[in-house]
Image: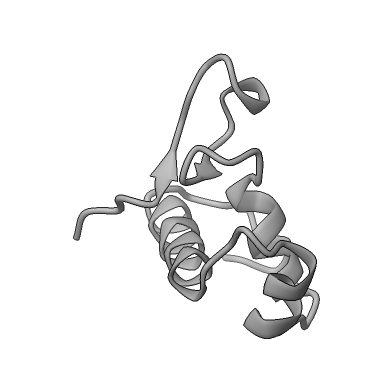
Length: 76
């Protein structure tokens, strides 16, 4: 699957992955979802975002954590 809504530019937001070249980091969107905001809530606060942007931010986060080994409390 190709993620075409995520951009990484060294000169923008410190090179953090952002949504469509906007100054909205993927991490911000994922954090809002993790804190219980709905897509409609997020879009109300960030009107430049589209529902597809939020879905793709979550897919990007899934791919990012899938490729890493994370130290979890209680992991054997």
